[in-house]
Image (cartoon, rainbow, N blue to C red; front, top):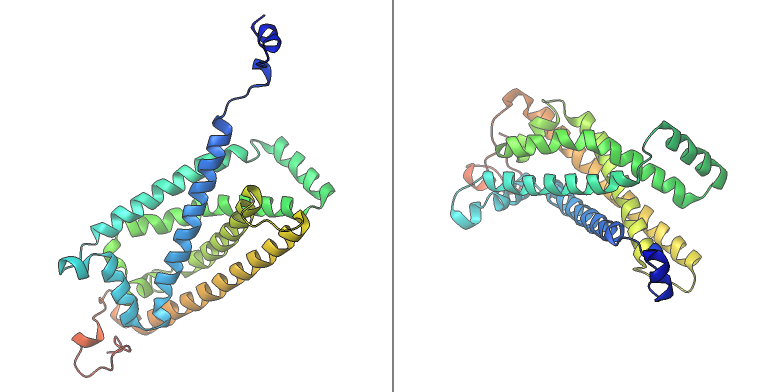
Length: 261
């Protein structure tokens, strides 16, 4: 009766849906964008090891408040990591709404994907797969950063990568993060129409080229950075646990190449 009366009055109640799915989509997109930008910044910070060990030490101490308070407070890093964990959990909870809920739904989707042979559908599948992998891989890393923020630095990070045998996990995490983030940003740009071209096909082609270029850049940068930490970790293994001391505090060493003592 209420539905019939609403239709007569021009307010179709049956056709009026909840706005919450759209709101949750916006929140999912915003949290995903924030995490992608964070990962780009994170990669820029850790890759300073490619410049010098002193550069990486300075970035580490900056985030620990050393240059503001005159001493390091690693707990500041723990607070930042806790905020990132909360953002990851929020994004994961919102994203899992769209995952296949059971084996039957998964088989239906795989059949649909095989029949369609649509590249964007395939990209969505890989976004789900890498997101699922990151749920396990990233949890190990962020827990270490949360519980031991004092173990970040040129020697400290290298020891963790090599002597603590974390490099296999970081290889898998790097692949998952860069693929997931690149696909996610591409899908966000397409979904919200950030870069409109004359035709939809032209937009897709342009955005896919940009996506793969960005993914390739960060993968190369990431593997080069990981290789640098592995090399330092191998060299530093006999002095495992020894913290890094910047060059200007080590008499007789050339600035920018410290830590070889």
